[in-house]
Length: 166
Image 1 (cartoon, one colour):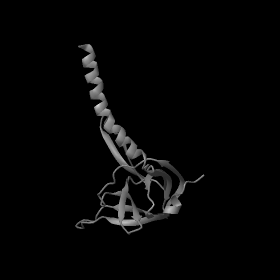
Image 2: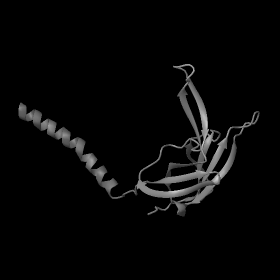
Image 3: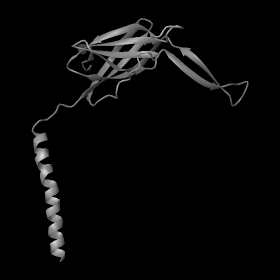
Image 4: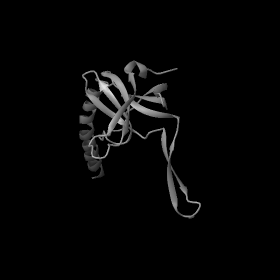
């Protein structure tokens, strides 16, 4: 009786495994190149944005944000077919909100905005063969009564600028 149960279990296991062997063989014949991401160290000051260093690694980025009116910085990737992908939003590195305890009223928080003259920051950019340009914009809140935020171009970089630096 035990031998019959073992034989049935082994047979069931083989029936489940054999189809997956065939699937593995089919997918193994068509290797897919891994996705690439550039870690780009940027410097920003009153004159705009410059690239400091680029490191390319295997990997992917998070899903892009779809809100073009969100204040801060916006990085857009323009593809060869003129399609624009929103790479993502970045908090403005020149503007930092600080919270601190109110010395006059312990236990209460106060906040203030600090404006810096320059700052370094890091962005992750997907590397695509059909990418032509990466643009950085400052997004200012929409003026009262206007529906669209104001965009100011801070810097523009080509796919060749995103080559790994040594």
